[in-house]
Image 1 (cartoon, rainbow, N blue to C red):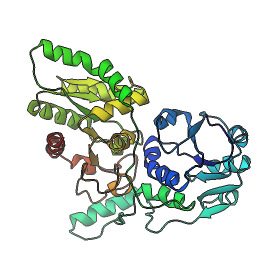
Image 2 (cartoon, helix red, strand yellow):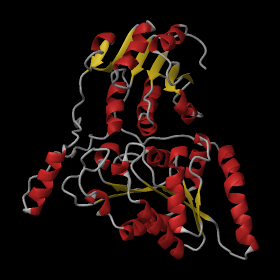
Image 3 (cartoon, rainbow, N blue to C red):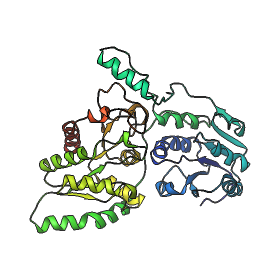
Image 4 (cartoon, one colour):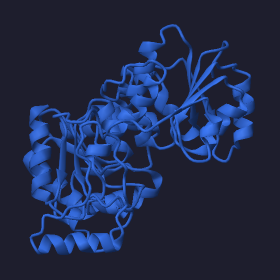
Length: 381
């Protein structure tokens, strides 16, 4: 909880991956506001994400189901001078307006611009995401089969990425809009705790079996909350784990995920066999971050853990299908540490939750291609 009066309230976003992508803007805001108190208003489910974060002086959590009037009453007591509203929802602007914060900055959107004292216009280079209809998808597939060069509108600009959306808004308060990589902080003590809890027994077992060499931790994240269109097939995750394990004898795989993805993680672990352990739903967010930090590489879909891994410095291998790495790729756009794989499906990215045809965007990414990407990163590290 914060203390003292005045300063800047940052209304945070509500999704894990999006929250990570706001960290460059928070860093730039801290640079531009030396001495100012910066407090983040965040959903309770993301509260632990912000431990040790150097850009913040504190956090104010709100509960699932808590109304804007309740949130505003708590904010009023803090006497903030400025609110930077990162989400585009009417509710997020209403909270700051009800709290009586004098300066309220956010993007202009229907039903909320009047709640802001400074409604920012869309930034240059912004890509308007368009969810393709089934008819549009079929037209693209048919055009490709005919050899036509008709293609959907896809993000091309180097400033299309979502991190620029938040940096541009922070620039309204005088912050430098130049991009820097998203970063999260994991303390050494947290790493030591997860090593003791999750790896010490495995090391002892290997030593008892006379197996030499350092234990190499690799990660799998086969889930994605947004929908099945973002999920590379589970059997291919398992195939990659089997093949990489055959080549790196000292590796161990952890399958990560939420409690709701435990069954999926169990399927991947069962199909992979051997040294693949399903720990989906068994870690706290801070433990998850620490385990990601000590992974040599994470094979993941385009989802929140992809952003977490990149933000703690772990390279990722990501099959992209319905979404676009140009918009929501890991880390700083163009970061050579990561391997982002795409097929030549003419309908990708469609930005849909569920594929209405044959899932060719993901099925077109082979397990062999992913194996090679994982081995390349593992060798480099």
